[in-house]
Image 1 (cartoon, rainbow, N blue to C red):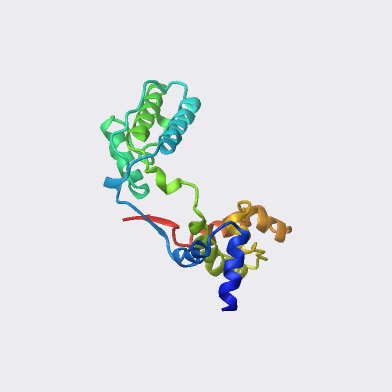
Image 2 (cartoon, rainbow, N blue to C red):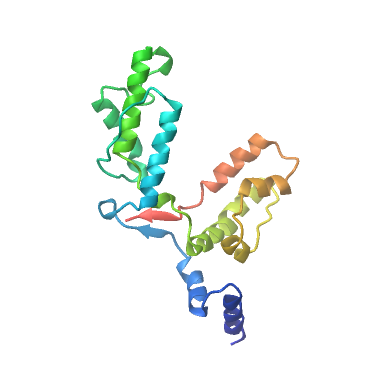
Length: 209
C-alpha cells in the first residue's frame, strides 16, 4: 500500500498518471520492436534528415550534381551490401575494393557521384534514429546500470550515474563527459576505447520485426 502511494506521488510530481508511470517500468523491460521494412513509412522528419545528409555530401563534394531519387528504404544492417551493389551498378568499385589514392580525378568524381546517388536511392530507415521516448530511456538506464557501468568498473573506472528519474526526464546524460569528470587522470584514448567496447556490449534499444 505504501509503495503504491509513493509511486502515485512521484507520478504527480512529474506530471504523469499513476498508470502511465507504472507502465514505464514494465514497458521499459525490453527493446522497442519496429515494423518490418515493407511497412515502414517515413515521416517528414525522416525525409528532412535524409535531405540534410545529402546536403552534407554536396558540401563536401561540390562536384556532385543532380538529385537522388529514393528507390526503397532499407534496414541498417543491409546498408553495406545494398550500397556496394548500387555502386557496382554505376560502374564504381565498392569501398575497400580499391585504393582511393590510385584513382584519377575523373574516377574520383564518378565515385563521389555514384555514392551520392546510391545513398539517396537506398536510405536507411529513419525510425531507428528517432529521439528516444521516456520508455526507451527507462530501458536504456536499466542496461547502463546493469551492464555498462559494471563493465567500466571492472576496467578500473569510477562510474557516477544520475538517478533513473533524472536520466529519463532530465537533461541528456553524456557518458564520456561523466566519465571524464569522475576519472580526471585517465588518458583520453584509453577511455574512448574502453567506453566504446563496454557500450557496444549492450543490446540495441530498438529492433525491427
